[in-house]
Image 1: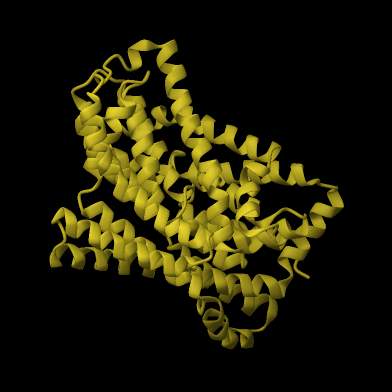
Image 2: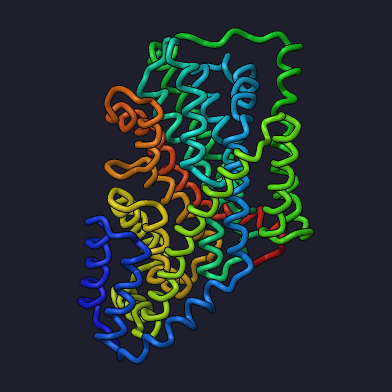
Length: 436
């Protein structure tokens, strides 16, 4: 049995190699080879190929390129402007004005794209020009875009949930159902903190959007229907048991193609760009997944999960104490690692302990996704911070970092709520699919 000191040194080496810039997939392959060679036998390396094949020969993973392609088509197809303008009619007159539109548009786009980075870039390109000439706090504008975009990995469909489900043998359909209520609740919390801040400090958003006539509102409301329809078709087919997540994603791609055809923006050039981007992103994700498969295999042979579970048992840690330890651990880790690296790099070690502690895998999946959301806007490596600043193209990134602080607090509040009331996560999957 490997010792706790050796486990700590191995995990520290993994973090160090990632921090110096090595790709997370390469780091996992390297640690797998080192662990097998030093602690087991070099002969075990011959079986890694079979292990990679076994872990990647998974129909669920086919949903990844489908959902990536769906997001790419919608990002490049010009539907975001229509969504933003329509939501401005309904949300722009609230306290906080167009800041609510940033959150609402992010939530709606997240419901079909599955990517936080794509959501940040897309909403940022639309929102920043619209808000540049208005009297809004730059920090709060940037923070609302960066934080709102994190909803892309919580509100289904989510690529992160697909990867988590494939790595842990957890139903992706249940994970999708579990993400709906927390996603809606987080959206409401984001909008609530905007209202509270703008009432306390009215100077943060003094330029509200005038009430649009009802005729204009209803006319523009039609622009929201295609996105709502795609979400309803994709998620409804999964919840009703008519399609697997992979099949539902393929149907979503067909719907997106038909939508772009109706907008007259569908061209061979656009399709080619979307396909190339899909191949690049999918290849990157699958490389990480295969590296994690090898590492998981070696860690299982070495007995790492059993050693850590034994340590927690020896110190008498309860479920709540373990979750709080994970909360602090992931907040710190999120300051230094990219989202996928943080999630995939820790699942092989953490998940067996989660199961041993009796924590529901679906609940833990949503908890982990929320912590990944936190990492997206946590300095110094939060991806959304740099995406929004890159779209902005001027000023200091400190404006984005300061602007995300209220929204970070709302994410921590959401974590506290799902710890105290786990049914926020588990009620809908239990209602849709039966008790897990």
